[in-house]
Image (cartoon, rainbow, N blue to C red; front, side, top):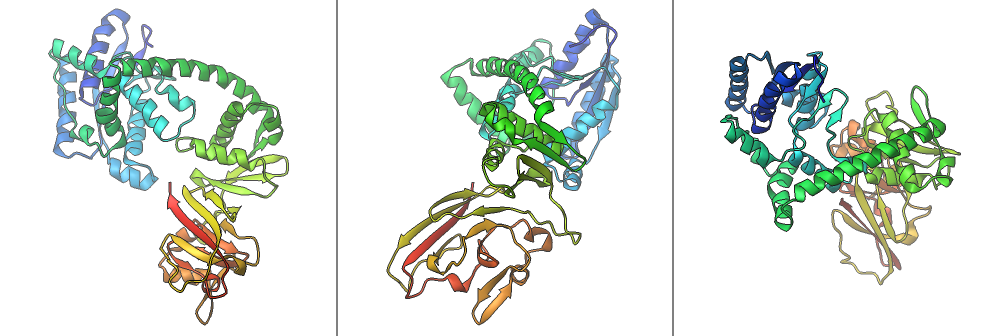
Length: 442
C-alpha cells in the first residue's frame, strides 16, 4: 500500500475508525519514511457537533505535528444541485478534496464491518457479481489499511492506546439503510456465526479474484463486440449466440456504463431487460437510468441518450405489448399485472385507483404499455380530450409527462394509472370479457 518516500493523505473524520487510521499511520511512518498529511471535510449537516469534530481533528493533528487541512462544504446544497443523494454528494466532495492534496496515496478508514455492510447492501439492492466483492483494499491511489480489522478490534485499539474519538449520532439512525444493516442485520448474523463478518470478508476477497479474471476475459469481448461513437454505444448481438449468459451480462453492463458514464444504479433488473431486448424485433426499446435508451436495431443493441424535444419535455420512447394475462415491469420499476375473465355484467363492478377493469372487446388494436405519443387522446363524457389536456388538469408538469407510462389502444389512451381512465372502455351491460389491470411499485 505504501512505499518509502511517498506522500500519503489520510481522510480523518474524528470517529474511532479514522482516529485509529491516523495513529497507525503516524507510527508506521517511523518504519516506512513517508510523508503524512490529513484532510477533514466538515459537511455542513450536523451543526455544532460537526464543527466540534473538525476542531478536534485539527487539535490532535497539531499535537502530532501532522499538517491538517479543514474543509467546510454544504453537502445538502451539493446534493440538490447535482441531483445526487446526500451520502453520494458528501462522498464525492470528500474525494475531490483528497485529490487536491496531489498525494501518492489516499488513505481512508474502511474496515471489515464496512466491507460486510457493503456486500449485504449490494446484495439486497440487486447488485452484480462485482458488487459482491465489496470494497477493494487498493483501488488506484486509494488505500484502506484497516480493511483487515473489525470495528471491535479498532475500538479495542483506541482503548488500549487511550485514543479519544468523536461519535456521530447519525450513525445510529436505522432509517438509513446502511445503519440498519450495521445495527440490526449483522448482529443477527453474528448470533448465527460469530465469525460472520470474517466469512463475508473472505468470500468477498474470492469474488474480487474471480472478477479480476472475468474482467480480462470481458475486456477482450468488449474490444471485439462493442463500438462507441460520440453519442451512442453499439453492442453486436452476434455475441449472444457465442458466449454464456454470465459473460453477456457483464458485457451489457459495460455497454450501459460507457453510454451513461457511470454504473452506480444499474441493477440486475436493467441487465436482464437488455438481455431480453436482444431477442425481440428491430425497433423495440427500453429505458434505463441516467436518461439512457437501449434499442434493438437489426443485428445490434444501441445505447444512447434520450433526446429532449427542445421545449424542456423529455419523451421516454418505450413500448411493450400488454398480454391478456401476465405481467410487465416498466423501466421505472412499476409492475403491471393483467388477467382476462368472462363475466356477467354488474352495475357495481369494483374500481380502485390502481386497479381497473375494462371491456376487453372494445379494444380495437393490440393494447400496449408505453409512454405518450403525439396525437394521444382519451374519451370523456360527451367527446374526447387530448392527453396533454388531461395531464394539465391533473397538474402534471411538462417535464414529467414524457416519463409517465400508460396503456393505449393505438392513439386512444385506455388508462393513465393514478390519473384517469377512458370512458370508452368501461364495462356495460354488453360486456362479456373483463380485462383486469393492476399496477404496483416494486
